[in-house]
Amino acid sequence: MMSARHFLSMMDYTPDELVGMIRRGIELKDLRNRGVLFEPLRGRVLAMIFEKSSTRTRVSFEAGMIQLGGQAIFLSPRDTQLGRGEPIADGARVMSRMVDAVMIRTFAHSNLTEFAANSRVPVINGLSDDLHPCQLLADMQTFLEHRGSIKGKTVAWIGDGNNMCNSYIEAAIQFDFKLRVACPEGYEPSPQFMALAGDRVTLTRDPREAVKGAHLISTDVWTSMGQEEETAKRIALFKPFQVTRELLDLAAEEVLFMHCLPAHRGEEISEDLLDDIRSVAWDQAENRLHAQKALLEFLVAPAYQPA
Image (cartoon, rainbow, N blue to C red; front, side):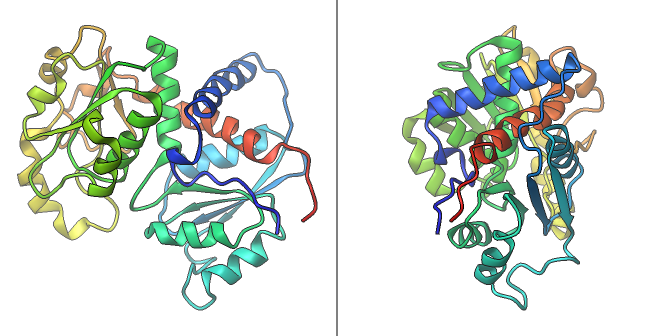
């Protein structure tokens, strides 16, 4: 079986490859903005398996494949049953004989690793309970566009130590920045990622302390998909962790604010935060398209070699 390269985590690539990918994302964005037709993936097919629904992930991957000359097949939770009925390994063996790449948005990260281990084509993590690496490509591209290299800068993550936070920890290692995580007790990022990062990442209970001098502040919803029954408890607990304009004022003068969206105004962010001049959330959302096109080109464009 041909050993394909996958994108399950930021750690699957070298720092140089990741920087190359986001620089390529900027080039592909420029081509698109200038109306240049560029179709290196003509005749290629991406299968998109969604166990968790998503607006941005679906639109960005599907539009990205079409713009690169290929096509995408959307498989909703009703269309596939990862590990329910047919074993994941069997599904991977069959599907990877029919398509050129597979993007999976799922709950358990082990679904991804098992699928990838049995796939002859690249598998992309479109989000798992552990990680969201595609979003980090977009975030890093957005920072580069607005402020140049993030190397040596300080980033603050405010709120839940969730999959996005774990991916920020991996990005801190790969892009060489300092990360401060401010979260309530019991909602820390995964210990395995913290251990990986060493002294690059610091944990605090005080958002004000976390943002002091920060060049980038990021947050996410307080209640992720599948946690809806905890909503009331989380809202009470996370209240002091709302990101506001006043909080941004405590950071570096040139601070940027990012949010992977969807946002709940009045919860993790103040009502007016996305309208603040320091917010780049809309550029960040658009860059999912361009960063993922660079990723797809990187993984799928090389000449096809029969297994």
